[in-house]
Length: 219
Image (cartoon, rainbow, N blue to C red; front, side):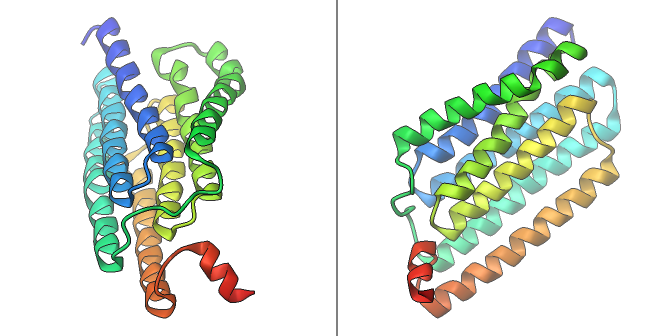
């Protein structure tokens, strides 16, 4: 693979990775959140696969396969099961409307570029130049956690943060060892299973997972 082709494909994968995070803020259907998260998992796996090909690292290729299986396959499957069991289809009105959310995502992306500029100038390469994308997804994930009301939406926000952190690790260090990614992936899987159990109990006890309604019950 030539350097120019590698750079173009890496930029394309990173662009799709960031676009998926922005689409989470745009869509209101919970099923769409899950599809977008699965697509982002594929983009993250593509980033790892491109780095593996460029660096000739087969352990990183194994990480790419693991990411595709877990974040584009197993985790979306578990979230779809939780969605089907709950019967909820749409996010309630978020704390910040869609237009303001998209503008905030643009501001957070610019902030990510500003913060990481010293790092990209220190060691310029196709991977480090894409480093702001990973940080932008982390910030958008935190924003999703802060503004969405459904429990499943907040699970997606948590997973966006994790995907962003993983992308930063890949782009800053040209990949992480397989054993490290295995540990992180199992931690994320465990967290999602716990959150699925908690949302199921919330539905059984309160009839829904709107966090504002639960706060009113607490008050």
